[in-house]
Length: 507
Image (cartoon, rainbow, N blue to C red; front, side, top):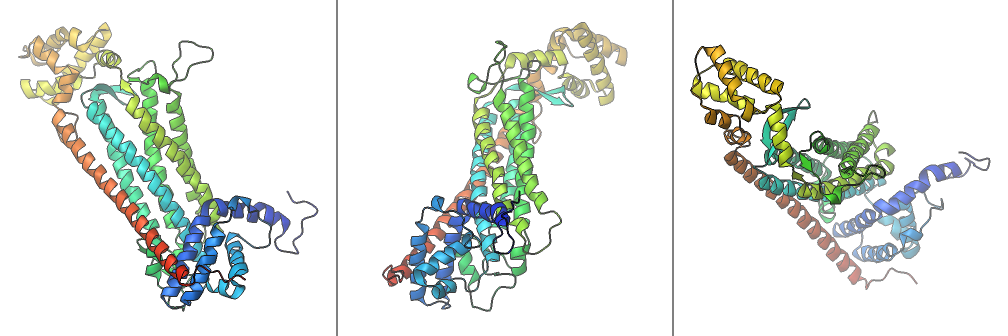
């Protein structure tokens, strides 16, 4: 709200300072100061290596920057004397080495390429943290899927019991989705991993800067090529948050299944007491509230991602504040909620168990093994599938009407339905019938590629483990490259500072 004391005659106008510049300064202190410091160091090294800046001057600048970085940032407040945190650092550098020498650090660069490089550094760090969490979750899911590869569940379609499956096979479907999510996020990281430094404002510079050296010193794989695109093509933002959104939309659907499975009427998933809250009034209640929190946090992650992508909508293809500090800081909330989901879900999946008694009861009551009876009639009695399907349907209706189970109460209706449809008795005896309608047999015969049969599942799990190991290798390679770049920058800085005896030039 504007007050009567606000004035637009002197920069910054008080309302602009309060509503824009001060929050941006605080956000830069919190989120971007370390990356800016590293860019300043790398740029000084590159300028010295290319001969644009005298090595002694670069050493004095670097020594002064080291002192500035030691300042307690939490003690800094925005006064309006400078426009933003970048100019604050430049001003402090000028106090230490003189305005002229401090200004030489900015040779061949702009706040435009600095900003997008800072933002990419922040995103890479957060993407790497997210990938680490996803790898942990996928590893846990693979272990549980392996452990539960023979554990029967009821699989649902359209909210109704459909076929028996195993918990391991169900989890394998989620594993595949998350492995694809890891691929998509990996592609987004490769887009982010192209350095904007050297683009300057729009068109690079007439100074003989080394863009590849800057990228290497800052831990990027390479420079982003087109200079205009470095400051205009914000697809590194939209791709990151679009892939992040898709991942947590996918996880949200999985989490919703977990919620349904814990419902009293379904009851096939048991959640241990450590993840259960009680009612304040109803003593019988076991509320698996963490699953609701997982669903909420996954939805919030999707919402945060939408906010960032939508902020890019209909913006001009140029440098703009719509892609800069405030939207970047707002996007970090997506990574915060995402991390909470991954941590909690990994712990929960390792702890839950399937309730075999409820599964067995629901299988019997819903007649969901009837598909295999039809298949067996085709294979062993020579019927067409449509004729076999009709016979099986009659059997299922009779069992449901009688309130019984397919195994114990279905053989007599089967004999009658088969006789009515074919005019003969089946070759299948009661023992063969019971085998055909058992959930164990239903699963065991489904050995096709990607199916729940024991051999098929073993093959799938082996492939998933190999894909996960490849993801871990990529993660480790990225960390090694980051560590190597950091060490190279530190060594180059130390060489230049040591050459001037660590002096800042102050009296």
